[in-house]
Length: 552
Image (cartoon, rainbow, N blue to C red):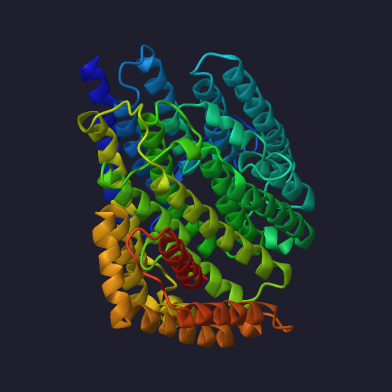
């Protein structure tokens, strides 16, 4: 049994390295293989694969995340009697996404598409019980709606293979929004939480939920030319973004919070697809895969330590007892907020830079800013919930049993860090990033943010009495007030630069209001005394304002 547990992650790791070298070696070249069937339409009824930049992106994302999840499953499901069945179904799940990523014909796409649906239901049924059965059937039937419409899309292509019409776009749109869990098919994604945590990590980062994005990019790249269809996709994605973002702020179930955050980010990607801007959408898809898979895995580790409870009010990552977990959680959450210069910062920078250019949808400004704000809100809420709780008495695992689960978490965090630096080198629109107004403002406050966050992490990770003494000393020296003063000046300049986004000045006035509030915090004396809870709350509020400002 132990050798079998080592076999699957090793094979998948070798496959991942092969894909990495193949993708880097090929660059932007295209390799294709096709086999037609009979006298039917060769474009539709053919088994065809191709390796182009889009396929390389999806394949690299799936392989890297899947390898981490396989390693994580090895530690998370120790002692499970159904290990072989689980890992084989998980392998089928990942291979189906690989087939979908490489496919360049509708038949091969359908094979990967159906494989995703069937294997996902099998994984949700892993834990026997009524809840797993109910959630699995809801997921199955919701995705079957998309499968039916994709079959209709294939039939329409067989009649007019070279001319996409409004009918093609409508059925393709329904297929895409079902797989990507957009309203009204959003219900299946939170219900898929009945599956084991490694499955949730894979589903919500780089496989099932990204299937809809893939087919819209592959077959519906002309959706922007069909204004009505693009408008419908934009409205549905905006509604999903609003309701999932609002729900994630008040949800107390850890896995549901992360699931709702997936809906927020997938909705952001869909909004940019509806606007016809695919570079920010695909960049954020890649960055989201690493940070969301890591966030699910660290969530599973917390649940593992809490004896199976998923209520954030009953969980803890008490810093002195879990320093590694605390640091990893901070990396993933800061990446999701958009902290410089992690992967989330690069993708959000591209999104906001494209937003400045304008796409003809005035409400897109409100939708995207709401998505970014809710992303920061639930991230900080989750962080402070986990660090303020005291250690639970029923901690079920020791440090040695956590090591197999920490290794893939470290790999995912390194992936997020490397992406944040690597995208500046390999991204085609690097000139747009270098000339960005947002990057210019972030560079001015980067030193201040690093200073405040570093001192705050000292308080969170180390001895609380020592942390309060450090803050008391810094307060007497005036460094905290001067740092916040620089934030206030940067926010004022930032408000002038973004005010042109809205003719009525709603965005600019909001940022100015935030600036005035920050100035009031600067002028207010900070009562740093040992054991003061109000001091910690005020410092947390200041850090939230700083990070939200930098992520905007």
